[in-house]
View (cartoon, rainbow, N blue to C red):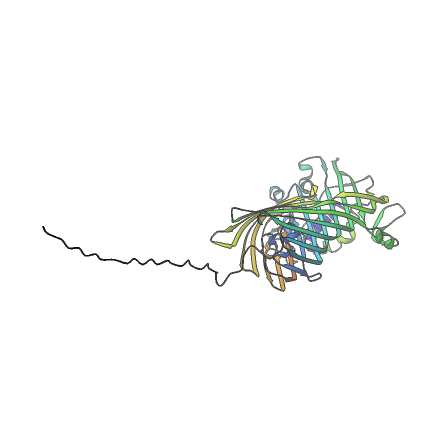
Length: 496
């Protein structure tokens, strides 16, 4: 495989990741949204305003993607067409300003299979079963810097932290929250039992490049962990054939589930009449994976004479055959199989503050900070929201966010009438406005589309009381009337 094809594989993988969104996170646009029943997934202290029963599959379907790059990071318009960043017509500084130290892409899915929530006194209970898939890719900026500058900057390069990971798991959870201090303080927790379906974690931890007389000498080392009920065929030389599945041990492997547990903790606090502060930490726990395979790249070296200047008028034809070439970039040798491994989950932290307007309490403004803790795949976001709930069964929000993946503008609308609930939300509309003819986003992505139908029940117990048509007034005190009788006394003056 030529280095030209390696470049195209990386480029194609980056461009296609957003379109792989078969898979998300929770709707952060709904954090301050009145009546949004799945707020408890972001903060278990946030009790829904009514009881609810989920419609299977369609109750909470959430698909999301975040990238720190887009098609416009690698392709540039010219007077004669489009060219890649490798072209001398693309200024070095222009391209390098579009590259981060770590260039990330995350694709996620969260689908609720069953859920029910109900209140009892000052407590709220939730039970749900959901499926979650996460995919992450990280490519260091040094790799693209080398592609662009090569030996014009240095004759020796050492690049690390090229990686990709993916996992799918089922979650069964029970949540409980309760209010204290005259309902000013509310605390909550969720206990989750996890069943890992599969996970793959691959990394190239060393990529060294040394400039010779007229060629580059390249060395690489990588490793991979994979836990799944199915495996890939292994050739006679012990290399893994990623194009052929081995299903011989499927049933025995399914009978040895990968189990784990996690806890979500959260709290909210109302103060100064119009303010609410909130904090939560999610996925404090671990997973135990059985039937794990460890693989490693052999000590390999190859040489190439440099990157070519590539114009991509025919890029669609070039990308069409890349799937067959992806597994040839690095071959992996199987080292161990059937081993057990345990590890901590990636945690997420939410910190928020909301202010209701004194002149109209149904209008509020909020700030939400989100931090994902996942080593090289970590990211953070600040989101500023304006929300309104004109009726006890209707609410809407619009918000603006800044994160490692750029900026985004999102919104959501929620109908939560007695007996029926429907919500639709998008954490960013920006990618929809700037796409290529193939619907590939030009700019970075930070979005999450969520929708759901739920059946609500019980009395509205939100922060906004029902409007009373008449106020019951205390009877006015009776007036006491005192009558004063005037007596006229006549006197006779006697003159002596």
